[in-house]
View (cartoon, rainbow, N blue to C red):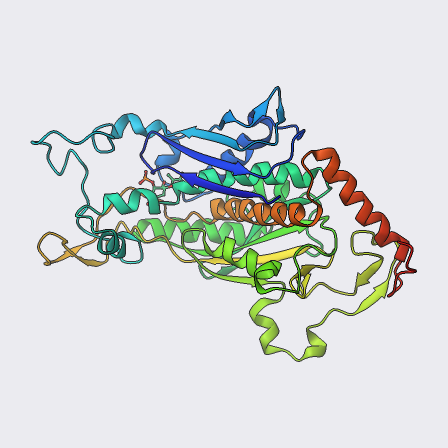
Length: 406
Ligand code: EPS
């Protein structure tokens, strides 16, 4: 059994949908309790545009859940776009009236540098870049977050929790407390820019205001941390089973992400081995890590493409949003003449939201790795398989070789 999902939906279409497969039967799941809080977190953050005043994303189940529990069947969810009311003509499913104007259809002929607009119209042979940007829009991440919330619910049953925070916005680097707060999301969500450094928070808000005034945009870096993972998710035996690669793919697939670091990341390349690798000690209290402890976690919770039992720590770099109110040079697709890119309503920065999307993508990869290792058609079966593995790890009791009975 594997955890997979597929989203569909255009930014100003009628609704966004997602189909989630692989969730075992018997998982308690409630949209208002388990999905909507993350949808709301994704809509927040200082620097978002006016669209977020229109939308109040709420998930509705349309399949796979009955009487508050999963059935083991595909789970289908839907979020209505409230803005659709304002886009009924431009985003109609039917062919337009012969006299419909480009304005009415909100056609886009001035592609934005950095966006999917230009390459998309060439590749898909479209005249109107709206046919591309509606799907390329990060509004799609709403349903990634919905799928991720289901994955988080499943992982929580095994004692795994996932949180995120912002570590850099534009040029401003945040101090990161060590250790991180136990409830990372509760702490980060108290900040309008989801940082754990009040001094940096003040400077970040100033930077966002100045950037907005200049008609420009910002990016930055967020960090996702997953705690409570058992040792041994993923595998060293095949390239496509290595968890580091799977995480990087999932995170890089988020709109506007340009880099992924695990643990020390690029910094490891600048140091000697002795300053990088985490030494081992036995520690029977470290049950999730199989009775071993690492003196530090530079590896970010992964060795050989497998979880170590230490916290998983991943950082992701986001480029500045490509819709600028002070537009960059472009070309009119109808004439080939030089022009300014369109000024669609947009955000100045969406990094706080991106961190929530990052949590969701990490959750889906980890849920998949859990199902790959432990399987089970029901939650009870998954739990038995998980506990059997944890029990046999503890029989080894921090010894390098098992006694053959475990
Ligand atoms: C986006 C442009 C803005 C953002 C949108 C992503 O939307 P609009 O064009 O409707 O103002 O608000 O993000 C969301 C709608 C969202 O839910 O995150 C874009 O072009 O990518």
